[in-house]
Amino acid sequence: MLSYQHLYHAGNLADVQKHALLCFMLDYLVQKDKPLSYIETHAGRGLYRLDAEEAVKTGEAAKGIMAVEDAFAPDPPYRLRLAATRARWGDAAYPGSPLLAALTLREMDTIHLAELHPQEHRLLSEVVHIWDAHVHKKDGFATALALTPPTPRRGLMLIDPPYEVKTDYDVIPGHIANIARKWNVGIIALWYPLLTNAAHIGMLAELSARFPDALRHEVRFPAAKADHKMIGSGMFIINAPWGTGDEAKRLSRLFA
Image (cartoon, rainbow, N blue to C red; front, top):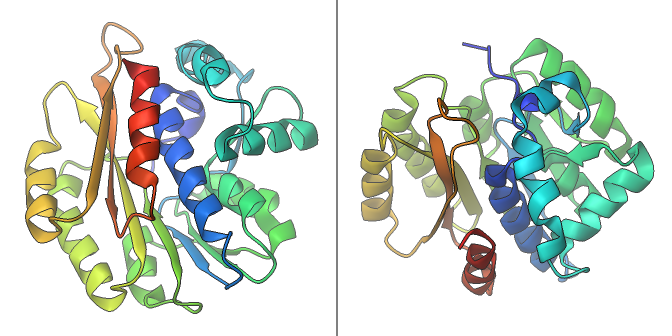
């Protein structure tokens, strides 16, 4: 199923949580003068316009990044990447996770992005080509398994599926276990929605049993509209970099 397009939801509060933690972890990794690999399994188009009809229609960005950005300190990695995006593409531009990674990583680093949706893949390729990113029009989990362990071996993988298929919750723990078995030193970060039907509970229970030392961070927020089912979001991070837990606690205060 390829119906999901993140443009309707770009810049929402779930993005704020996911992107703030991603930027913190990537910024930590680039402090060391050693190359790294960044892999993303469900990349999207990479760059969004918050004044687009689709984004304005849902109003999620207005209740998300537009409402809370000033609560961040002026110079954390997330805000710096937002500023860099706007300087290059205009005030209404908003970076997806592939662009946040590309803006953070160095020439010595390697970027692999998987996106199966034809339109999103084309737009993503246009955005990230200047960074020599490897853009794969393939299934994200198959790509992740094929690429691991990557070269360089040090690095981070973001798994951010749209959860269009109900069985995603059932199969994701197995996918992550297979990836982690091949890449035991990799940072593996899974984003998941908190829905009114609590669909994530079984998945998180299995993941927590398999990876008891992983960092689990969840935030709650009001549904964007009365009929929306998402009331929060979470990140499950295996091999989280030092300080990520403290950063997650600071981030939680924005949602209190």
